[in-house]
Length: 160
Length: 177
Image 1 (cartoon, rainbow over the protein chains, first blue to last red):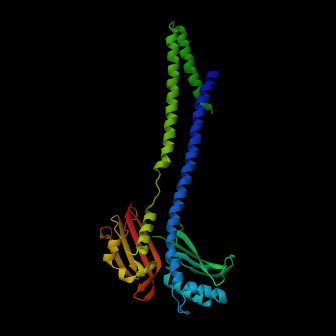
Image 2 (cartoon, chains in turn cyan, orange; image 1 turned 30 degrees about the horizontal axis):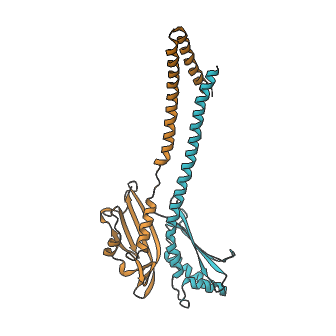
Image 3 (cartoon, rainbow over the protein chains, first blue to last red; image 1 turned 180 degrees about the horizontal axis):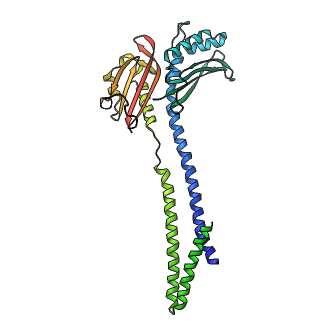
C-alpha cells in the first residue's frame, strides 16, 4: 500500500508540473500576443496625425490665419463662431459618412476645461468589427506663456 | 483522483508480482536488478509522455502568428505621404502631409514605390493612379479570402505652385495572404 502511494505521488507530481507549466505558457502567450497587437494598433493609429496636422495648418480667409492660429485667436476673444464655421466646412469636405461613424474636434485648456467641440456623425450602422476608433492630440501655444490648448481629433472609420 | 490512485495501485501490483516471481527464483540477485529495471522503464515511459506534453506546450506560443499585414500597409502609406521622393512637398524642408501636385504622376510614384508584393491605387481628388499592374488587373481586391486589403483616406493639403488647396488622398493597398 505504501508503494502504491509512492507511485501515485510520482504520477501526481508530474501531472501537477504539467498543469502549472500549461497555465504559465497560456497566460504568457495571451499577454505577449495582446502586447504585440497593441503596439501594431498604436503604430497604425499614428497615421491620422496627418489629418490633424493638415486640419491645423489649413489656411482660412480670416485675417490670413491658419486654423491653429484661429483656435488661439478664438480662445483669447472667447468667440468660436468662425472656428465652428470653418471646422464644419472641413467636416463637409472630408467626412465620408458611409465609411466613418463619427468625426470629432475637441479643444481643451491646460486645466481640462472644454472650450470647443464639434462632432460630425455618419453612418451608425457600420458594423463593430470593421469600425476602428482612432484619436490623436496635439498641444498648441497661446499668448499666455504658461497656458496651451490641447486639440484632439477623433475619427471612427472602417479601414476597408 | 480515483483513476490516479488506480494507476499508482497498478504500478505497485506490477512490483508485487515481480517480487513474488523473484522469491520463487533462486538466482535472486539478477532478478532484483530486473525488477528495478522494469519499474524504471514504466517511470521513463510516464516521464517521456509528460516531457513530450511540456515540449508541445512550450512550442504552441512560438508558432502562433501575429498578422502584420495591416502594419505593412500602414508603413507603405506613410512612405508615400512622408517621403520627399514620393508625394511630400519640399521647399528647403520637407512638409509631410502636403502633397506636391507635380509629384503626383505614375512615373514618380512607381519610382518611389518598389514593392512587387503589393498592388496600390492612389486617388487624389478623383485622379486615380494604379501601381504594380500585376495585382491591379481585375477589380481591386475582388477576392477578400485570398487578399488582404486596406483602404485609407487622408485629409491633405495640395501645393500647386504657390497656391495651397484642400484635398482628399485615398490609398488602397492589397497583397496576397
